[in-house]
Length: 496
Image (cartoon, rainbow, N blue to C red):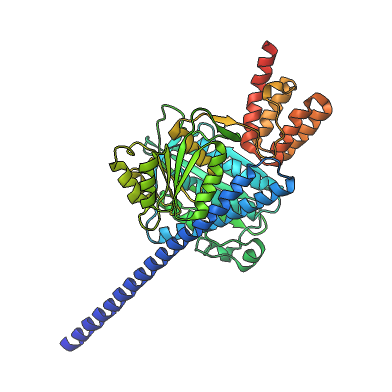
């Protein structure tokens, strides 16, 4: 009896040790996979930075033909799609490694909706779909990770548009009281009239890389979006539910309980120059670009030099530190990962030198994690941008740090638009109709409106042409801004 008990204990200990070794091996393999994916993401982002950088530079050139502009737009969209795939793989690696952290801040839900709607409405319009946003009145300001919440909504809505060939896609946002009066419950629902999902596929819908084979062949994709979205919503305290009928459509929904945020003033980020700019007012400013990849340095120099900046270059942190000491630039663009001396160490040493302590440093990294941003700011960087660099965001940071007043000019492909005040304008009722069409974002209706306007009176052709150009370019924000300005312009004209 004693022997059998000893044998059983020994067997159980052996099984436990084997399970422990298997678990340890799995954890090591998972860490190795996550490290590999993170490193590959960095290596892929670096050349993509040059591709998207030069696409943005060339798109700002004047005198481009429509064929050339379309070609550049194809390059840019292709690059952004590749970037989205890279980000998806990296997100999955971070989630599996338990390294995803939520960055909560005060956000205005209407502003979040506006951002999401601007992107999805264009995609839906291009497929001939109706996009509807149903938001309950009085959406509050809350504390949440706005970027991650936006990512989830864009994933769900992007899938809805992708898998819907006719009909409409709807985003519905509702809110109601939570048991804790300091919180609010917000419900998000994404509905479509698309192909639907067969019951046998619902169980695996949120697994990474899972797609029905016929769906993969017809629509493409990696099958990462839903897996990542479910994980992110889980981190926020919710769970995505799905209801679907093949051939009739799907509904994806989740609810979050979020802390209410008290805002004393509207939230605002850096001022991005929406109009095309040709330079800036005041004395000439100097910028030192530090990056070990020549193509990245060239893209930044080629973009900034025509705006009137004096540009200097260095190919590693040590050389950058030496040049900064010798040249005393007004601003430094510092890559984080470089040989000899990395950007973090170079920035830290700059802050130890009295002459360079106050020089703004924008850290730039192909590793776009929250930890990278925090590490950059901890050693003394003033701001952080991830690669591939969005040049509008770069200009916003430079303008804010150097207190620049940008000089506007004609945009790429423009022939010199008449100022708003010089445009003959229709009556107030017609302008109110335009404002409503712009708010809805129906580009086809705006083009029809422009044609009716020009047919009504040849004097309105200049305004009609501007509306056609904005609608053809799916420039929702510019249309809303223009339609909002014109009633005041008309009122000012009547007073003079």
